[in-house]
Image (cartoon, rainbow, N blue to C red):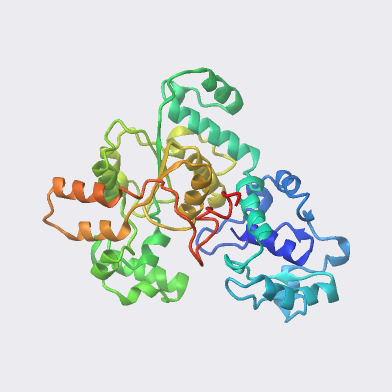
Length: 401
């Protein structure tokens, strides 16, 4: 999303864009660059008629480095860009720097461009970047296609794991009776559990461990900490556990014949935490079960590439559902809306209230889940003011008039 906004800002300023530098996330600790994740040549080619893009700075600007900006206040560093800034702000505050020095480095840049009151050609460009220009590197797409093939044609695939993805996918295309599969984005890692400040049934030890983690990562500054667990759940602010999302899926009619792909990083609590989900859905697969260690060697330990693979499989699934809202959920909801694909958006407040009811019968729970999700299964939702164009691509990205 930041990359899309960077292209839009470059267009607004009539400037050349240098391929963005990706910050090192303190939680994921992945140093993967833009070129490690995205097909940079495709990116530049698709946008060649819109803006000029270079892979690295020209020699005359080689002094403009992170180290240079880290040592002192620099005239060419723009660090005061407000959240959701207008196009006018960039013309007033960044263009003069560009005109004086020939270069401007904007950091931080997350969420630094408004979703409203922008020229329609800028909005269309953001859509073009998001849905056409940004594609993953070939080896991610090839492995993703292989996993999708193994999900659709599971017979014998476990013994066919090799490095020739293309041959495997081409062969799958000739087969008939492709099976369907659901991708579940299980957003239940330690980072998410700690930041939510919710109680997940692990007792005093778990509470202390998550509180300590919050202190280390966010210095204890977590908004949810001021609310009780019951208040958070009733407001839909707690991520669903693997057991809870399993019950949601079962209530909606998915059963032990459903082929489920689990898209996740490290599940908080490990295998023990997802054992109930696996009992409900014995055909559940993930990256490790579908691909050999040799196939995963290029992405091992790289959170961004692992997420890219999950995103790719999620994009091509028959149904996508996320256990709680977040960046991955929002991006895939928007992308699948753009492609007219089915996405289930859990009613988090309803689910929180249902799980607080310890005496509810299964039939009552099932009826409430079905009724509460009748209009949350991929229906087109038009973007409202201040909402993200990347989560709600209609009408800006999808309508001619």
